[in-house]
Length: 192
Image 1 (cartoon, rainbow, N blue to C red):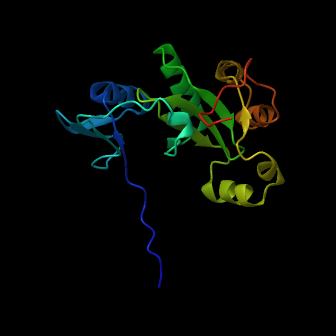
Image 2: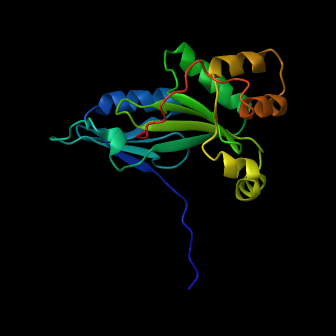
């Protein structure tokens, strides 16, 4: 029997910080509330009825062992271009929202943030500008096989290099090569 492949539509989070989550996702990905009541909210940043939802019911509590417990690691949003990704990084930086870590995965440049509940949200752009090409690279590249998590980078250094006129293709190779490493390698939210 043929598998009918549905598209991913939305992600729903449990939260005890409903308004903080609404505000954060509004600022970071431009999501607008479609409907909200005392215990829930549904938001979208495109034409869909909702892309992220929040359930805020009594008895929810923080998980102090979140890093070592099973669960979703991150959700991701993709920009059409590296230009858009870096412009968004600069806008968020100027608003006081700093990344948790940044990685060049080879197929994408990715900037990860923590939302108010401590969930990672990845903002990314495809390095090839073509999903067929990046998917082929992922399947066949010895570079990806050797380093699937990616190379860390300092987003301020990368943004400055890009603003100075360094072309993306040249910059991306340098990032992947380790030329823009941060002063300290950050945690990616997994047990060590």
